[in-house]
Image (cartoon, rainbow, N blue to C red; front, side, top):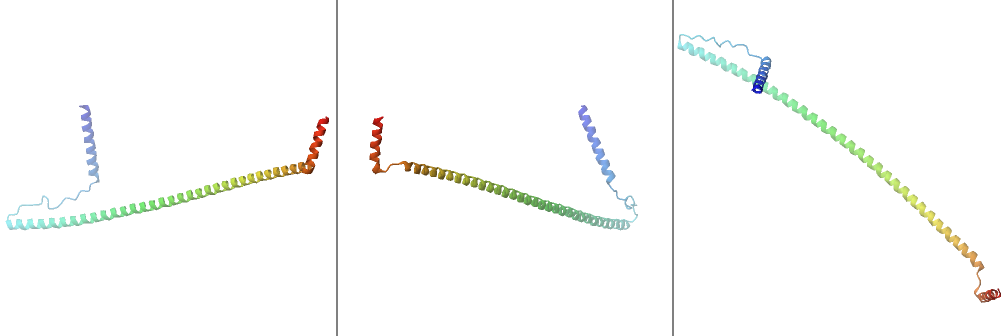
Length: 180
């Protein structure tokens, strides 16, 4: 029961605040002169003429109010259009800015990619030159070994015996070996 009472009180307070704030912002029209001014005429024709005059005045006032309303609505439409145009322009500018930033980011990524490719190319060239140098050193070493082997072979070949002398040398070696 206590919660419903407090809820109702809260709702009443909110409603009162709402209406009081609305009341303070509202501009009331000044009192109209023909309200409460009717005095019953004695003659029905006079009453009819007075009523017709009141109707004409009322129609004129309604026409003026409608004109003001149309003007206000047109002003509101123009203001709304202006705000919409400003919003659209702000969105267009923001989109252009985003596109510029995106393009700049793409340029930066492209430059970074090119730098990375160049570094990779340089690394490959360095590795290739190192491999080539290594291969050349191995070739030189192989050539040197071949030369050394040929040199050793030449040195040993000077000790070699000719085929004609081979038999006599073999016999000499056998005889020398028996004599020992």
